[in-house]
Image (cartoon, rainbow, N blue to C red; front, top):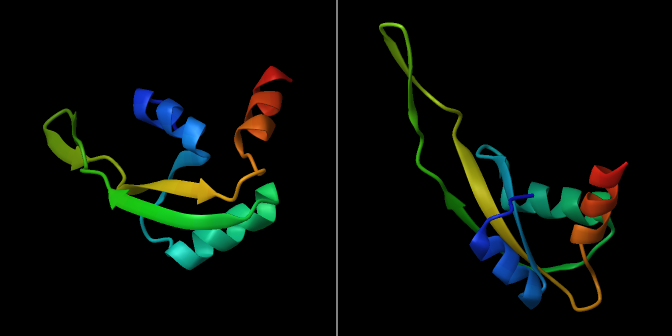
Length: 89
């Protein structure tokens, strides 16, 4: 899960934000989220975030490429509760 100002604002609209591997397809992501969290997804939006340059001595490299997903859940479902309980223990 991603916790930014925008993602916290979207929680009020029953939307959740997370980073996933860029090679994953939307159908794979939808299947795994529904299976793991036991929720129903209405819509999914995704965007590829830009890579950041890194330097290790004289060698230039890049960070891993990933995709940010904004997932809209059906009313009555929530992903946030299991994440909060997991961090407390």
